[in-house]
Length: 300
Ligand SMILES: [Zn+2]
Image 1 (cartoon, protein in one colour):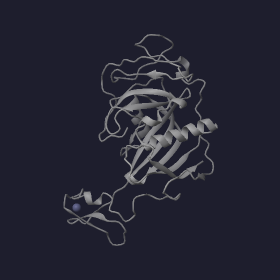
Image 2 (spheres, rainbow, N blue to C red):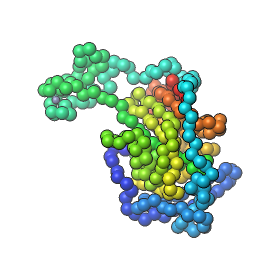
Image 3 (cartoon, rainbow, N blue to C red):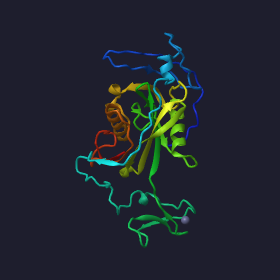
Image 4 (cartoon, rainbow, N blue to C red):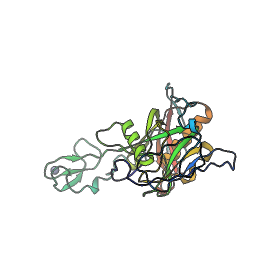
């Protein structure tokens, strides 16, 4: 999950859940509602009506009948999914010559000296340049890694217990750390936020958000063990059938895009790999998760 600090594993605490199956609309939805954070993943055993033991449909949790679907990668095709003011090319709403956050960098990260803000020789953008050691502070996008966990034709979402987007739903995802691979980061974030051990099956999406300097890398994954429960940054973890995904209560535009593409793929009978650029519509709030265009959408 997006956060500003690193949390290792789940904090200790009592876990209590209840199983709430319902079918008011005829669609299947299994709900695991956490009452407190976990000390370790909760074992989901076979059928029971106990409120303290979690048990959705037994063997389906172990995915016997849902062997991992692996995306077949073929040639990329491109669709003009973009709309609105942005052209279909790999453009950004950020001007190339802008200073970005360079002007916010006032001290050198290496020697602590004061910086000046200029365009270095041979370059095009304003940079923060140390006036003592002359080093240039280059800014690079951050990579957000996460898992789209398929389970019994449902996907696992976490309700955020932290800002931003408190109380809204997201795939387990967060900033990749130095020293780990993208898959390791996605697996770690899933453990931290959903106390779930997962196996990464394939890549699903890379979504660039130039405006805020982020790239999302989302993997398809499956539960290695029939366990999940909210980690310290989640108030609830729940499996959603496609028809029940709360598209108006998702935390970020990246999650809207990812889940829409996934739902389209599932309904079309073939999972693809997607690349795209999420450009927020000018003048809209970051919290308006539907105010974006998906540009340069490539799919295998
Ligand atoms: Zn310096």
